[in-house]
Length: 104
Image 1 (cartoon, rainbow, N blue to C red):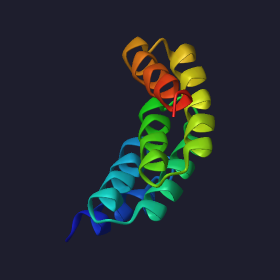
Image 2: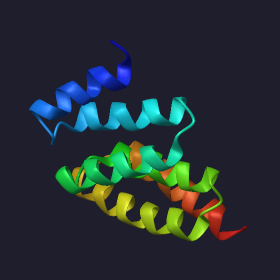
Image 3: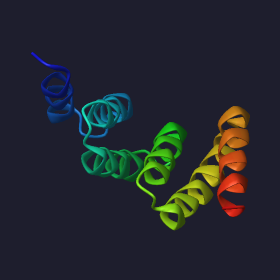
């Protein structure tokens, strides 16, 4: 069974499983399907609004696609989630990316 199928099987049993949903999104990126990845990140965030890595990778994916305004909006939401969860490392990384994008 491939990774996508295995992760989808987990998600059929537990659609809110943040780790599996994030893993599926990352696998979509690895396979060159950024739009599918963005959809999975959005679903992950919908079910788990404090799952900071989903915001961070979603924003990075948006940057890769040239969707800077969407990336900045996602970073703002991710920074808020990082503040709520006291995730200082992710907060610093997202803040730096937001600042970098502001200078483009």
